[in-house]
Image (cartoon, rainbow, N blue to C red; front, side, top):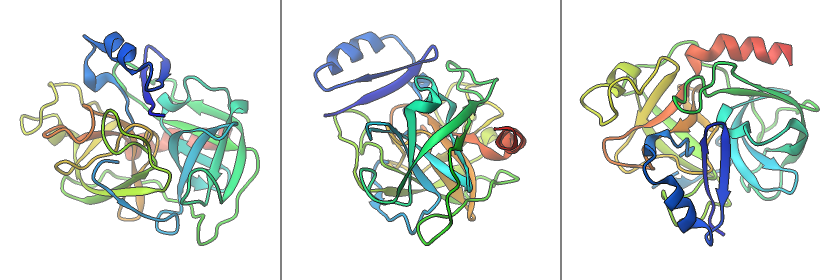
Length: 267
């Protein structure tokens, strides 16, 4: 079954292949870049050992819907738009597995909080913190990723990982973890004439990453963008997936770091 997931007006809609045409009809006239299709296209298979901070957010029935990053023994960072349709007791997190459907450890969620300044139309402050119901131990497959304190400059190589789809439409999601290498694009550069976003779309809590015909895609939302061994971005939104001259847009961890740290301490 092919799923198309997007958030609009604080809602998240999932449709099967049978309902795809209806969904597309409903989406006509809406700016494509407003859809937070957490967006891996033209990536390669990888392993959890290579990215042991990566987690899968799942329903209690085991359906993957977003990615996340483990930052300490009981805290996962993800995108705010991932949690708009779920209560904490409806979510579990698979940790330490390359396969999103089995292996590793499944941990329930005790609480979560998304940024009070999150806006589903502007996609500003697209960050949330999840508190796991029990702590996890580090191992070869489970590691905590440090939060970036400063946003790296344009051109810094980075890697984004996830279990999302391999193209924008009519592609199934992947069972095994994928990665793709991209280059960071600072806000000022992403919001310039070099790229195709309209002036003002790239806001202060956003950072971009680009490599032609390479990107994240549906199902990768909330997942990690890592550079220099630090979490620098959270998969947030973009203009379809891997569209030429449209970088993927991520929540900027450095600008949101103080909120993440304080919120994690409160939960």
